[in-house]
Length: 365
Ligand code: 5AD
Ligand code: FES
Image (cartoon, rainbow, N blue to C red; front, top):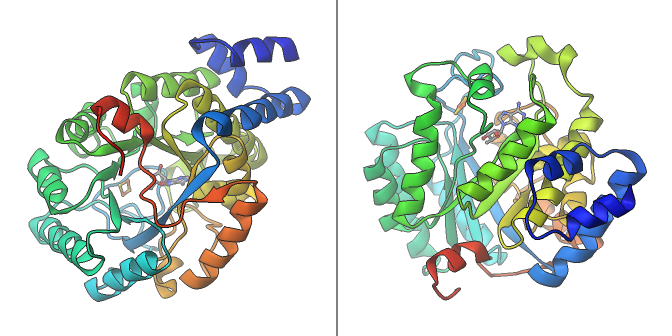
């Protein structure tokens, strides 16, 4: 069996069957696969890990995804919206601590008040950090004009997870209506790429009805779309959401975690030069979850720098880690963890996706 694994690892191009086989591994064979990828990829990609300070600045959301704890219909969610001053302070904290870049994330809104506010914030973050802090946005589906406006104002990366690249499964985890349209979501990714954003997407792993073949197709979707960055993590059921009713059909949490790491390692083989994030949801299952992801393929980690009082309310899923610590504690704790995983922190670097520059034939910053 190990020789079959080694054979696949050394192949030039991976088929759906290869990927599905790798993703489904367990036990000693899985250990062998992960360790082989872990020793192979830092040789090509380098040992560096990049920090993105994550600011979850609001949990107001106009959408109703069936898996998400901050969905519009969850009346138990305590809604908040952090003021601009606190967001700017978080950005200054990230800059001072040499994080290189931040991610601004919130529930999805597309009204003018919101989109104009983001434009203003982007300009301000750029100005107070002398243009040095990179900015990634994770604010859902927007019009091409809005994406362009935000790009001009200083955002250069955008995260928009496809959640599942299988249309049928997509509609099992989202309402089938105008607001949650599968094709529109793919179209948004294409528009982001056309504008020039480094474009990131991702999926959840261990969803109800999901199979290894779906997951293999997800990886091929990233490759087919020439995606620059991927964030993917285990699905964690939330009591106040419709998908909770399927909890008995899910893989055990530990298996979701294992398959998530398998996905990261398989993706690293398939796309050696992209950025892969060690998703926070990994840590909700295993206290060392993110560090394990860094060992087997991930090269980006997103310390939470949301002001602490609001962290508890950004509960996309339950058991979310690091909701008590302040940003300072998070940063200390993480640097130790990254070193323990045998990696180095790329302090003060944007840590752009090498894949993006290959696509654009530009020079890296
Ligand atoms: N479990 C795991 N991940 C989730 N997300 C939302 N809800 C859950 C959940 N219950 C992820 C989605 C979204 C990202 C911001 O958080 O993939 O894109
Ligand atoms: Fe907010 Fe899905 S519930 S974007």
